[in-house]
Figure 1 (cartoon, rainbow, N blue to C red):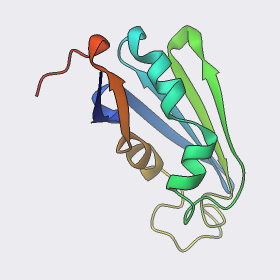
Figure 2 (figure 1 turned 180 degrees about the vertical axis):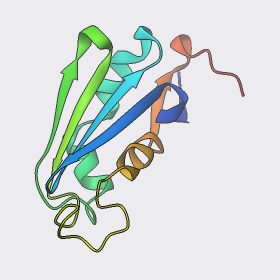
Figure 3 (figure 1 turned 90 degrees about the vertical axis):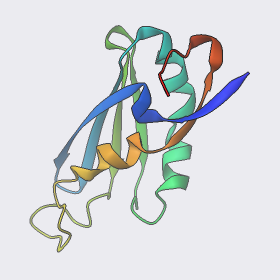
Amino acid sequence: MTKRISLRDIAHARAGDKGNRSNVGIFVYEEKHYSTLVREITPERLKTEFSNLVRGQVCCYPLPKVHGLNVVMDRALEGGVNESLNLDGHGKSWSFLILDLQIDIDLHTMEIEG
């Protein structure tokens, strides 16, 4: 049996940028949720969820030793800091957008209040 939750309930993230490329590191708080992260956060899903924001390739690199994913999104910053009129040219909001995604989690591994 599964439950639908926000990714932020089991993970935290940090965003960075280089030119028009955004990089987001996503890390689960508990190792038991790592497989859920890898299953739920895929390049295909991110391209679908954010098709209006990501114009290029999306890659997800697993980081099993630290229970995380390194998400790299090309052409995701409207040109980057020096070219974009976007208020978030550095892409810091990407971590919040991704953490707000709804995911399915196995109730047997979930111990979240609320």
